[in-house]
Each structure stands twice: as structure tokens, then as C-alpha cells.
Image (cartoon, rainbow, N blue to C red):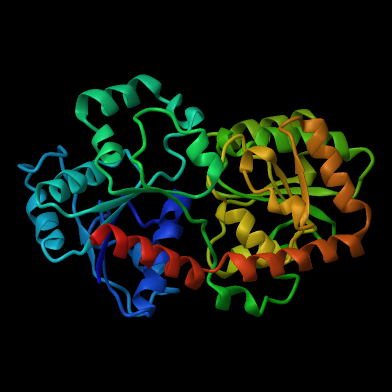
Length: 382
């Protein structure tokens, strides 16, 4: 089967969609399928190429399509049309990139079915960010065609479908989660490498947030929860590891105002092996998101054996039901209680982490997920 994936970028700094595309492409190539990746990245994009090469062997061809306007007459449309001419199915990731809308329009013209993965972009919280611009895009430029014209919509969990707004979803909605590459987490790195890279952390226990510094990810809520714990846990530190997308200055200012600057560390993004080293060293992982689809960060934290504290807006109830950590509300006081419970007994925290690894390896690996997606592709292609 020839499968074409389309998204704006494969740069890992863009968050979840590039990681999902890499996981699906890796599993599909390993299963013998022909895969082509279409992005708006420039032809020479080392960040994307290195990101793929870590797990996809051989790396599938990556076609750069950078439309000025998402119309079949755009000069960039020819290269994309040539890719789609031999495709059996198109997989569009997300709504808003111009290349996605162009791909959807070209696919419909030639009768090629496509699957749309929402990646949380129809959640009401996401739609209210830059709301006017998105309304114009949806109903005047025509981005709603990606929803209404899809042969199937792929959601990551039931909550994503339930909380979607905007155009009516097609009749075929399939729930398939994200996953990990099991070989990446089977043998974990020795402890200590991440600690050694963070000045002032030393041997102190620390809460790790491995996420973009964006209001959606709730870093302000975590800082408030940490401030509530600071007096009763005088040795505890807080580490934010992720690219700054608007919240970094606030975190630095608030940490200093509360007298916590020496215990709050903003270390920038960590990718590849360094992110696993961070998870292995963490005393507890925390993702206090205001809205999530299916968090790669939570999945990877559990795979690395880190006990987790997450909010109910992350829609990952298995953290609580499988005994891997705590699920809290968005209230900082509740977050602080969840963190305190995990921190209270280190041996219990290690047991939580062990159960998390078992959960992920049993349910959330890319080979399992690719088998389910392959069945969906075959269905829509028929």
C-alpha cells in the first residue's frame, strides 16, 4: 500500500503531530508499505531528517510542498499531485496548514480517500485561540472541507470526539491512541546524566514538566502547586524542559517573585536520548494541561518508569485506574496534593513507575497501533 502523510512540519519542536507521523511511518515502513511524507519544510531540513532517521529505516522520501494559496492552481500543487497520483490512501494530520487543505482538495478531485487526524484542533479551547482567524479559515477559505470530505476521522480518545466543535464529523470516526517505539524504552539509561546537566539541581528530588512552555500545558498551574509544596518539601526542585512558546518569561518572573528562583529550572527543550534521561532521573513527572488529545509526554514518562501526576483534562484516566500515579483537577491545591502523595513514599513511587511501564508496553506501542491503522486504511481504500 502507498501511504502519504501530510503535515506542515516534521520538526520535533512542533510537538505531537511530528512524533505521531514518525511513529506511524516507522511502523508502516517496517511492515513493507511504501510511505511518502509531504510537508512545508524546506527540502534541506536537518531537524526533520535527523528526527526521522532515529527510528524510521529506511527513511521514506520527504517532499517539500509550500503553497502560497491552498488551491489546485497554486504553483506548488503540481509536485503534490504527482505524489498523490500513485497513492492508495492519504493521511492528513491536523486542520490548519495550507499544505493540508491543498492535499485534501487534490485528493477529492481524483477520488483518493483520506483519513484526517484531528490532533485536538477541533477542541473548543483550541478553536477559541485566534478564534476570528479560524472562523474565517473554516467557513470562508474552506478548511471545513478537510472535516466533511474525510473518509474517516481519527481521534486519539473518546473525549476528543465528544468535545469537538465546528463542522459535523463524518460517520466514520475511529479511536486509536498514540504509542512509543518499544526498543527505545526497553533498556533505560543509567541515572544521573540529566541531573549533571542542570546546574544547581544536584541530588535533590524534582518534579519534571516535559512539555512546551505554553498556557495550554498549564505550567503556571504547576508553578503555583510547587509554591504550595515548597515549605513542606524544602529540598524539592521543579524542572521545566520544553521549548518556550510564550510562558517562559512568566515562569521566570513568578519564580523570582516567590523566592523560588534557585529551585525552579528552565532548561529548554530535550529531544532524543536526553528526554529519556530526564524522565529516568525525575522523582515525579507532571503534566497539568488544560487540554490534551493523547499526550506523548505522558506515554513516554510512563514507559520510562516515572510516576505521573496529570490533570483530568489530559484524558489519560489510566494513570489513576492502572495505579501509575494520580489524576487531579486543574486546581493548584489539588495538583499539590497529588504530587505530595507520590512524593511521600519513594518506594511507592517506584512501584507506580513499574506499573506505568507495564501499561505502556501492553497497550501503547507503535507496532500495535500501526496494525489498527492499517486496517482503517484498507477499509477506506476499498
